[in-house]
Length: 155
Image 1 (cartoon, one colour):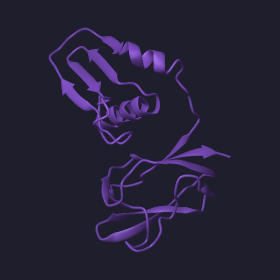
Image 2 (cartoon, one colour):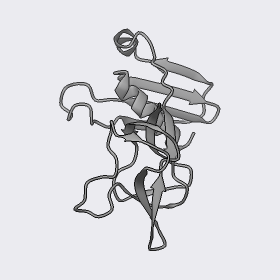
Image 3 (cartoon, one colour):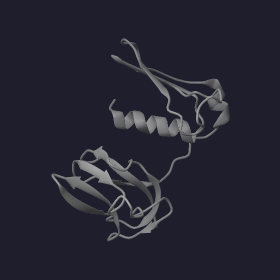
Image 4 (cartoon, helix red, strand yellow):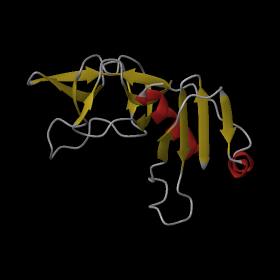
């Protein structure tokens, strides 16, 4: 399991109000638990993560979380992925507004961000039509080739 999978699980936990998630496979075990005692900063809280020794595969969800989210919502959102390794920027300069925000309607020629690679600023175009539903990267964050940058709902 890589960091991208763990981030996806954390996003699902936030969206579906799941307080605890545990996964065990051959030589890998991960347990995610959100702080839901009200002492955190609300929906921005980060789950605690722990790893353990090998164990058989099981999947456990906290009973309160199952009652809180009776169904998992499946979306048909697509991802705009990074075409290169570099540094992600949402705007052309620190003072400028971001190219796109959640709710922005885009076309294939819409510039959605810049990725700096070897001191060259590369404008990244959407290459598809839709509406931005989620921004997956922080400004000035390093990104990898193929890493999802945005989620869009196709038109």
